[in-house]
Amino acid sequence: MPLVHIDLIAGRSESQLRGMVKDVTDAIVKNTGAPAEHVHVVLNEMEKEHYAVGGVLKSDE
Image: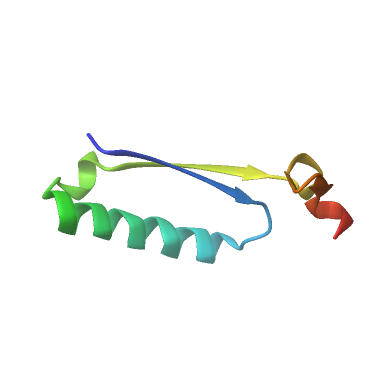
């Protein structure tokens, strides 16, 4: 059972997330031979106030 965790900053539409999950699942199926129904994708969306790069919150950019 492939398990993929994706962390990203919140703000994508449901349509964008749906497309990403499908593309990731298709890539796992293609490269591992695992059936699509066994591929699990977990999306962790973070608010800009909860993510920083180089000591700067993304919300401050």
